Length: 194
Image (tube, one colour):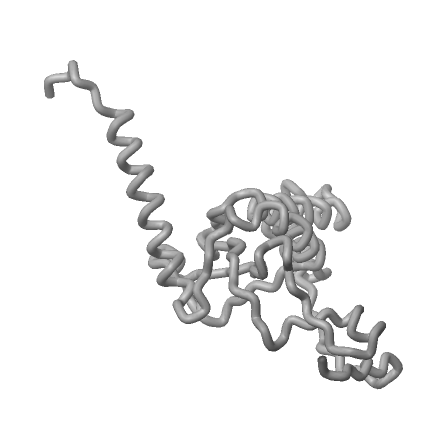
């Protein structure tokens, strides 16, 4: 085991400036665009947005195949990845024992969960899509961390050497083929002669 030096918690910090989406400009533009909803106050609009987002990330955790975001913005899903032997340090225990201690994830057979966002399907083509990213909020990350050890086998296994877009496209083609086959069988009527 290597020794571990605790970080200086009183050292100066470099903080990135935060750009909030739900700003005064957003509320002003929203009311101009939707005058019929101008009676809603800012806190109600925030509550609606937060509730919608929470419902989306809960569905991502619940569904193996993830969730397609509205307006064809992309797809979010949870993938099972192999344990990274180099960088998975348990900082709390390392500081406590002054030794570098790594997480082992014994409940999930040394696998770990990652939240993936992809917009590389053909139907997700929109301007500057390469610049888009996804950053999960703390509640989403903590919920994934709590639920993943209970049912880690149900999530899609992601290889570290393959592109997520290739794997994702292959899985979605399989699902759409199954749906098409099911629809054809439901519409088939052996007594109709046309």
